[in-house]
Image (cartoon, rainbow, N blue to C red; front, top):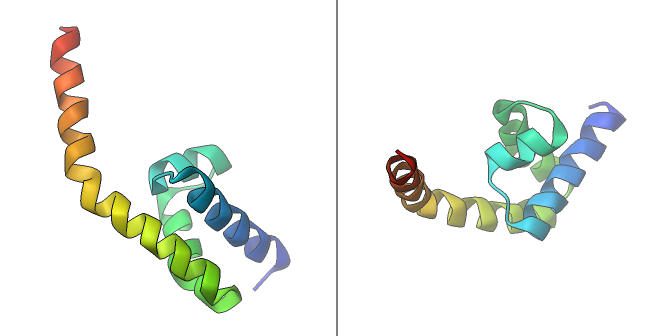
Length: 82
């Protein structure tokens, strides 16, 4: 694996932990696709730094559990603006 990919995976992982960001927010921040963020965090980071990967996985699981709430709030805000 190339060095810049490893560095990016670690940076994205640390960003997710620090800010509790979603995959979509991290992708926007780093200018990469959601698929790349997901691949970095689930596959690559696990090989590079398993401890960091475990911490990131906890945040991602929490975000996944709450996504229906965020979606409902977004829909609510959409119709309140109309």
